[in-house]
Length: 322
Image 1 (cartoon, rainbow, N blue to C red):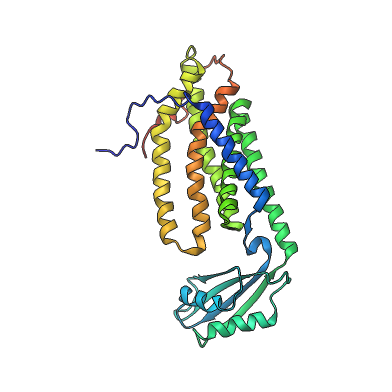
Image 2 (cartoon, one colour; image 1 turned 180 degrees about the vertical axis):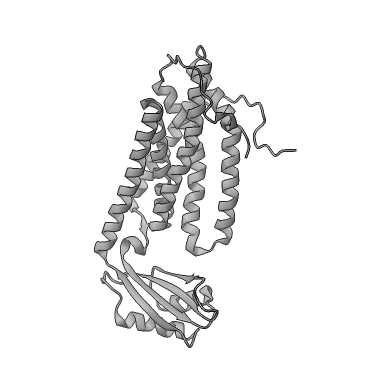
């Protein structure tokens, strides 16, 4: 017996309260934007500047003990992670300590590095500092600019791709859904003041790809049904399409969330921000592909004079669970 999250024959009316769903999305977007403007983001070392200290010892790294030792130094924004490499010797344990900029200094002072080394030697007597690297405010500013450019270029590429593959109405609906997902993800990081670093930028770009995948599956079936049901109203056709692809959409999101929730619970502090962004992105991405992209397509309307027969472009698998 196969697991099905959605009954085989569903007939839900997704557009009965489409104005309410669009209104909720608009309100959440405004809240996210206002939060960003008022309190900004809690930028990590990548964007604020700071120092990375690489140390090694023959003693096994216990991240909790290292963090307790550094907490006594009141360094502020500091993160600790163990470095794994198959080329390391069996007795070679490497740790990476990232410390936020102290009082606006370009680089960590010699006293700070000495204090960190002394605190860690109390735990691992044979520990030695291998390298110290600093990221100044100028470089951090360039990283912020590059991150913004990366997200804008990704969304612009999606706009062009959807426009060429479908029509301009489809392109605007897809891009609106992507912007919706990105803005809400940035907004929740602003509201909760979760650390925002380059890993979150990677998550945003991944969310763009995931959300686009969901939207294109729905749009492909819309295009097929436009050729197949030429007399059906656009609202009924979109409802039919979403119901046909709902099983595939929910199963994809469900299985992805299973992995993400496991990582969120067991992955540790190093990847927690990235996994949280991905988890939130999958939820809002699934929502937007149904209630934003399709609702906007209904508002904009599409061309109905399709003369060609519906080609088989792999859509026969759209409603398969896995």
